[in-house]
Length: 225
Image 1 (cartoon, one colour):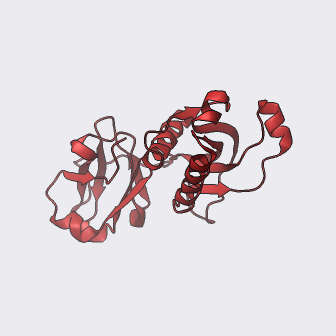
Image 2 (spheres, one colour; image 1 turned 30 degrees about the horizontal axis):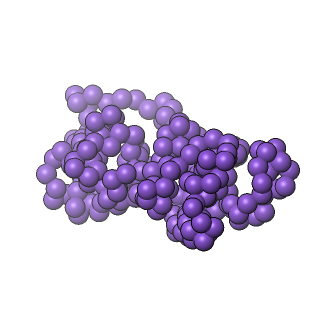
Image 3 (cartoon, helix red, strand yellow; image 1 turned 90 degrees about the vertical axis):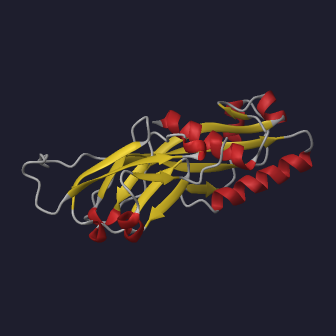
């Protein structure tokens, strides 16, 4: 799952620093001279969930972010753009505390302006002891909710997180972007449908769910990268 976060963070940097190479791994001369380096520095615990709430399994990954460019001015401008973009993203945590000199020495690199970026990695827990209902014993008035999550050009988005917060239900899309919730109450009582994919979040109101044809097609406002 960390590799999925790597790809997501590379795409995030690419949307801000267009035409700038993005590197994973230890900062070396090539990445320090020209490009953005995302070095996976450490793993940490996930923020605690509210008491009594079933949370996902998870932890955080911490990247050391360094920037290089053809001129110091451009590198500094790009570094600032990345910091402000990360601060405005609720799924990212920015750490601007000084990087210890011992860390730079361990990386065999000259100390340089940088920041640390923490991202949560989650894995939804299965509901224990839930009996699967067949169509025969499904309660009267229930129906499945089917849909597909797509991006630009109607390209399917696999692995997107789809949730019905009011019902505490969530799932992930398959490789073709499809998702399914079985045996739901009337759509008017579902609350909003929340979708997260490639760093973007989209909320679909229950009124929209009631009027859209089935299966539901959700077009995420992600940028082509």
